[in-house]
Length: 76
View 1 (cartoon, rainbow, N blue to C red):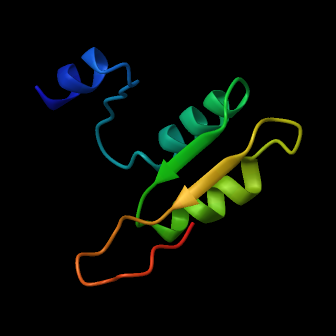
View 2 (cartoon, one colour):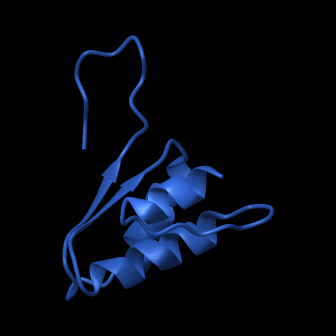
View 3 (cartoon, rainbow, N blue to C red):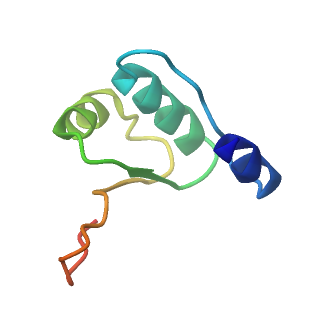
């Protein structure tokens, strides 16, 4: 139901069963071939996989940790 709202708003959604890290990285890398991309997540594995698989000739890919409720400084 939530993904339908994202699609209507113009976002892309992907549904994966189980561990989705590889699928998330693949989607971010494909997206960065055409536009600058922001990957939002808390998993350090995502950052490591992104550093390993990213194409230096593509557009920028930014990794942004999930915002924490009690943190006032946000990092990218």
